[in-house]
Image (cartoon, rainbow, N blue to C red; front, top):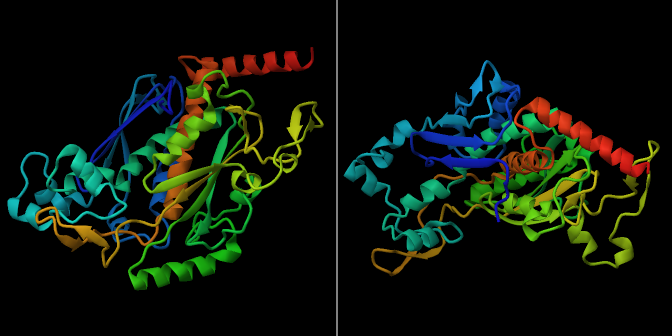
Length: 396
């Protein structure tokens, strides 16, 4: 199953290679490109207390190399290029044509990190230097996803859909708080140290990050993403691979270190009776269907129901630890400590921005699937016609 059916996204590039490429196909022609949105999301991804030294080196900027003319998409694939400034320090190790043998030997990875793709990837692709795995498995790749996701956000904005995120928990702090609503996410300060949903918990979170850094530890947590303004009827119940909840969770689970995804209030309602698990139906003042609560998180039967789409992604602690963990030396097959690679203490705030991008890509894909059209004008006309049909059905 692919999370995307009308759109296609391919990324390429290694963490310390020359740069990252994103190729996004399937966008309609005539979409105005918001360069401020693109730059802002790339900057938001780099932000957060507990990020490592790499974020002080990079100044991520997406250069548009195809698919756009005079500020509008052309309907052809959009090509994006993001330079890795750190490449200058790694050229001898990561040159695509010929590496410096001595430099490559110094950076060779042969004691894999438990929890990382190092060993699993090395065993699959038969690589003796596990750097060939970690360079692509690195979360640096998500920079290209955020850039592509910004274009998906531009399309969704044209349809009246907005997406926000915030840090719900970090290192267990905040675990007892309920899922947030749209107003709470609107209040999240992107300039705060951790983009915490509950600002009263942020000082405690910051102190925990500082303590973890001093101890050579790493921290995980949870981020909640909400899509606001999504109409009813995106996705479908008719086949297992058309259900939007499956496509959204697949996209979120593809983010490095995400180990679980919750829709709505799932972790609360599974422990109670059915009468307390579902959302009572009614009509709002405008005669439209409305729900008294949103425990379902905006999805029923794999279809959007018109309520806010609420998803929470749970990120494990980063697997690179300063003191290492018990591992195996691939050269000797004897015991060893896992090797250390420069790393963050936590990247949970960044995970929220990446999650926004993945949700945006899936929702933009679902909108294109629902309405169709080669141009934005055609897409918007189809969306308006769909709404008229729904209103006629409701008034029958």
